[in-house]
Image (cartoon, rainbow, N blue to C red; front, side):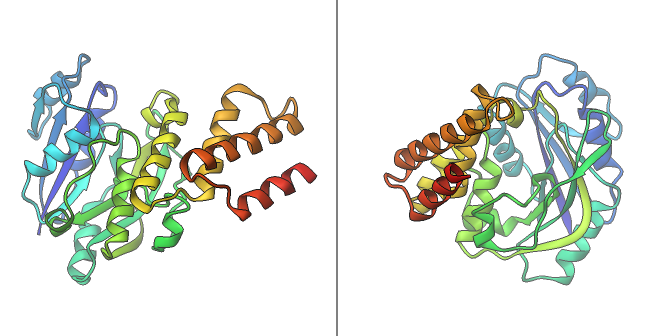
Length: 284
């Protein structure tokens, strides 16, 4: 069973060698690793040129991370596909365990494992909050860590590539799209990957944009946005400007107002559950 690992990259020279090494050290399958770099201006290309064993790579301007992932998928032919960002890592033996799981469970289309958030020096500092597969629960929270997920190529053949209009939640949107289509997911309860979390990374650095894009995605995919994501959006908006510690009552009032505003913007109505929740906050 051949496994294709796709790495989108842009100016992650300080991390990419560790990413490459984490793939090169894997066994248990025929593995092809391709890197699609968006024309990095740091030392990324130098790392790619000198890395041993040699890895297949391209460095040229692209349309962002989602475009790079899609280019990588199209450029490979493995039966199993993994997507590993250029600042994340696989843990030893991860691919072998994934391949064994797919071989033992031919009906499963997508498998995801446990993962850690890691710091700049690869040290795990918290476990990713992974949960057993439940599509309705996935609508409430993204419990799948992207580098710890692998899927069969037949998923791409049947359901297409990632949505290149999305820049932050393209992975979450894809899991939801597949779940909605009835694709079969399964949890492999073993640690597979480390997902790097630090202040300068794309997700943490653009939290309001991330949550706005998630809401837009839900509206397009399901026709409405769950209250939980509307509350999450309101919270990051208020948190940017006001401190909960300084004036808790003011913070809660602003959170309620922004939640109502978000509900009207995306859903054109306020659910009874949202109204009750805000009322309880104010009473406290």
